[in-house]
Length: 251
Image (cartoon, rainbow, N blue to C red; front, side):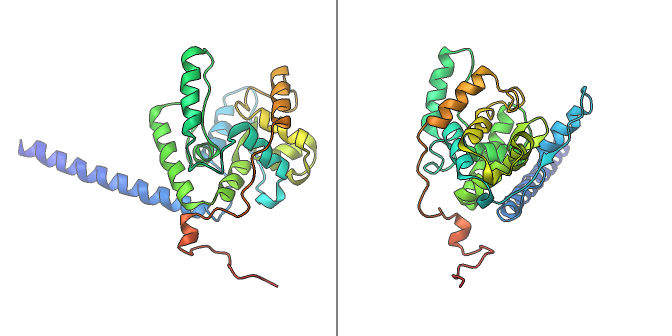
C-alpha cells in the first residue's frame, strides 16, 4: 500500500510539472506571437511531411506581410465568408454554434461554427485532426489569444498562416501564385474567390474553381460587409502598457 501511495504521489508531481511546463510554454509562445511574425506552423510541417509519402512532394510556400499590406477587400471577404461577427465576439460565436448544432441534426453534411480566432489558434499552435482533445486545446488557445492579442493582430496572423491550397499558406503567397500580384493589390472578386475555398482548401481550388466555389464566391462578393470598428480594440496587454511600439505621436 505504501509503495502504491508513493507511486501515486510521484505521478501527481510529474503530472503537475508537465501541466505547469505546458502552461508556461503555451503562454510564452502566445505572448511572443503577439509581436513576432509566425513564419512556420505545425500544420505547414505536417502537410509537407505527409507529402513525402504521396505522389508529389509539397513544400511550404509562405510569405509574411503586415496587415496594412493586405487589401481591405481580402479582410472583408474572410469576414463575410468565415466570421461575420468577428469584431463582436470574444473568440466564440455561440449563435453560430447553436445554429450549426440544429443544422447538423437534420443534414448529412455537417456545418462548422469556428470563428477566425478559433481557426487562428488551431492553425498556429495545433495539428489538423478532429477530436475532443484538440478541440479543448483549441478553446484554450482561443481564450489566450483573445485575451492578449487585439482583433487586428488576430486577423493579421490568420491571413498570413491560413492554408489556401497545396503547400500555399497565407494571402500573400496565394495572391502571388494564383493572380501574379501582391495581396495589397488583389481585387474584391479575387479576394472573394480565395475566401470561397477556405472551408476546404485541399478539396476546392482557386486556380480551377468548381461550380460550387464560383457560387460561393458570388455570395461572398455581394454580401454586405460587416463594419470595421473605428478604433482598434485593445488587448489585455495594451491595458498593462506592455506594447513594444510607442504610444507617442510622431511628427
